Picture 1 (cartoon, rainbow, N blue to C red):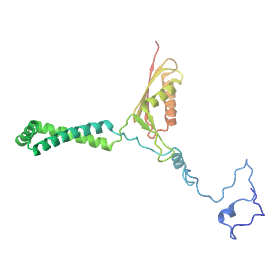
Picture 2: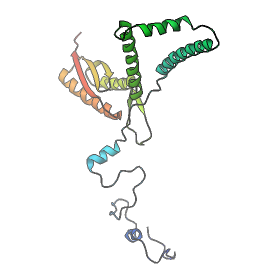
Picture 3: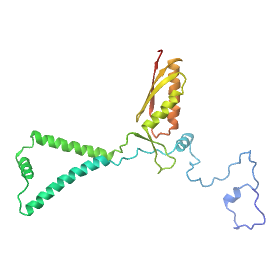
Picture 4: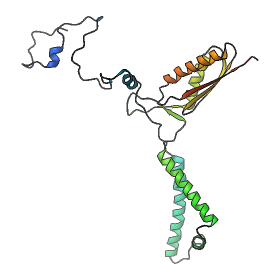
Length: 239
């Protein structure tokens, strides 16, 4: 584009950016010569990336599995604590009011005071309490929702997941398009995709190779954060 000569210049000393802008419009079919690089567009990869880094950037950001709310364990634990604390509080209030302590509390106090530490019931109670504590720690440190597979996201704060059953349906549909496959069964796990197919015609080895390639392409199109490995088994059916 040719600038209008009648417009006054905004500054007496032109910037370096303006000095490198061509004064004539380049033809649309010819590539424009690179000039001084300007600020990169928002979300665009830096210009000095290598081929592998550029491909990794274009694939999107890696996201983790969505965290579960753990509603059921939270409700169970809160219910147990509420019942135990409520019963103890009611008994303590009754004792403060001049009434005798409840029989269950007297029995529990006597058992804890008279039983030795190496008693079977004491060891069993300690083991159960330790197991519940470990279970709660695992729930607090793990995201859960193992039935969901995280997807790559173009935006860092955007999270998306795909159900394993949905991924298995897509892969099974892709497997059924392979010539020679009559039936296919696909199971998707976190680290592996297990596919089994029955072959009616063609060489089973060729069908296995084609099936592995098709499933690999379909898996890559799902844009999973951690693409699982593909294991294919074929069986010749003549009946």
